[in-house]
Image (cartoon, rainbow, N blue to C red; front, side):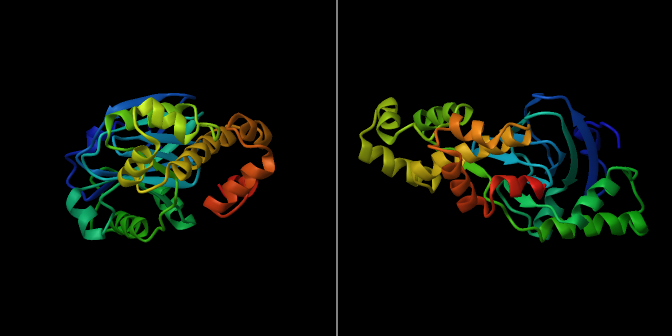
Length: 258
């Protein structure tokens, strides 16, 4: 595996190319885009990707599909090792990959394919083993189930700014009335606009923002108790219950699956 700039492969005459990189703690990739779609896989560590449409957290053994042309910045929660597959727009459409960013599960097969792909030559033999590996890689990406690991951002500039600030310091204690006041809206106008622009109630969005932050912090080794307290949950049990409702398992179990 070698650290490689993605733009070195933009013009490669192959539908799918792959690279691997390692980043130090808290490293930030500033906003950028690719002509190809990118499957960004957190092989180890937790990363957060931010676009104009929202924020996505990618724990270990999960991946984020980023469609072609989407500007995005990436924040490393700690030491992070990534594997990325870059897919031409034509191949992405043909495979039925999403038109919007989406966190997906990573099967053991997809994990192994990504690790194999980064060591193949850029212009691999399409008709040989390497070509079959990359074709299977694309097919396996397309069949992975989506995961609820995002917090969409409103289009309204006032609301978007407030949501970005809350994503940086999320808390269950931030109330609807306070958010409406800061946005210069009545409570009714705020709640209606927020749901229209995000597809979620503010309460559900706030909980999602807290859980995304928790994933990053728990992935970096912080205790469940400390994370629960900092995020404004009454006790660790309340936090665990909220985590289980959204992600299907308790925090300790979720991280053990990574």
